[in-house]
Amino acid sequence: MIYKDNLLVILGSELEVNCNKGSYHIVAYFPSVDNIERFSNYVSKYIKNINLSSQKVNVDILKILQIVSKLNGILIPAHIFTPFKGIYGRCTKSIKSLVGEYIFKEIPAVELGLSGDTFLASLIKELDEKTLLSNSDAHSLPKIGREYNVFKLENLSYESFVNSLFKKGNNRVLANYGLNPKLGKYHRSYCLDCKKASKKNLLLKNVIFQIHIM
Ligand SMILES: [Zn+2]
Image (cartoon, rainbow, N blue to C red; front, side, top):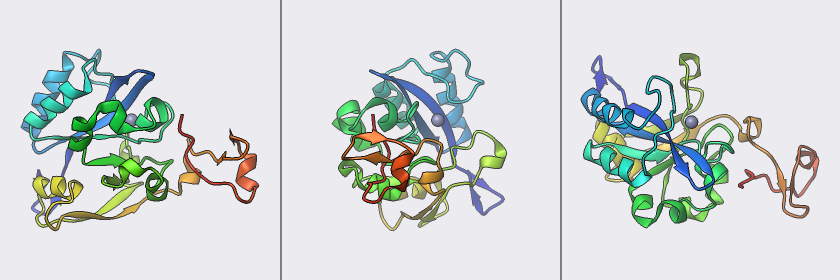
């Protein structure tokens, strides 16, 4: 929706879904208040307390994607590297193998999170085709804007925003801005020789900095 003629507001909802080893967070975006309300009404049947943020929804990811798509929404995995509730951090080494090819194709983008950046994501082959988003994961007002993206959009509209994630037309994410991932709460160094993640490794030469994927 457009606020005061020049601010595009993207309505979104963060949810937690189950995987074999635990759970991970996803974000769904919608074009209008009406659509996100309908989504909220649907998932409220499968959530203990809809009024708390990022609540676990006891529905299969495919079913959620179907409802989201029906309401002209899109789904992306949130803060993918976070150890506890990120899809790579918690559930899998490959999103495609976890969710299947169909769902993987329908996911246009992934959210990097505060402990990750575009360089780290570029080390993962399956992300080559995905748009990378640096979002704030803001659960309170002062956190809004701590990470952000620069978009090139054909129109100031939800459709152009979605097209930018799917890299359609002239719509693109031009740049990502965020915290140095080494300052992120969950960033660790991992030594390929000793197979250990430790603070000491940060001081050593020839250590490859990467997110420790479980
Ligand atoms: Zn989250």
